[in-house]
Amino acid sequence: MNIVINYGFVAVMTLSAASASAQSKTIMGETQTMTASVEAIEKTSREVTVKKPDGKYEVFYVPVGVKRFDTLKIGDKVTAKYYENTVVSVKAPGSKDVDKDSAAITKARDSAAGTTAHQQTITATITDIDMKTPSVTFSGPRGWTYSTRVKDKDLLSKVKVGDKVDITWTEALILSLDEGK
Image 1: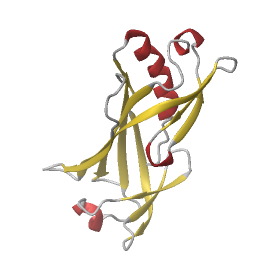
Image 2 (image 1 turned 135 degrees about the vertical axis):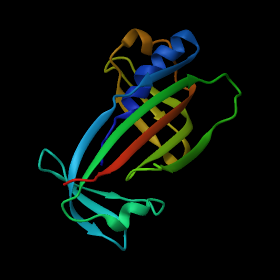
Image 3 (image 1 turned 180 degrees about the horizontal axis):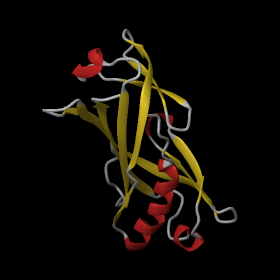
């Protein structure tokens, strides 16, 4: 499912709290569950179009490691459970920058289900703070930039332009093919 989570906003809120205590801060995300019906299957590109309960359509890619892809049929029900969390840590001056990405697929042994997981960690630099709005802008590797509003001005005042933070995003998606339609 194409679930959009606003990581940057979460990161900024966490950044302020982490900076105030000079420690790492973890924000646990919500677990979201959705069941959708398979409406189209593109075997060559391994894309599946599903119709969500709200009537909207989404297209998602099924990794090659998912063996049950070949058994999918129009009308099958697919259940997805999505989970994410974010960890933000203020870096000590002179610490080495981080830019790493990893992913894995785990298949269930006795059912038509599996888990995909993705984790990314980057070092970002605070490039601008606007106390009037209030907002903050980050920059990171590969041209990544992000600006967002911050709710707590007092916590924002505890960081400064040039501070570096490590931001780690972890996402997991559990997909299962419902045996009955």
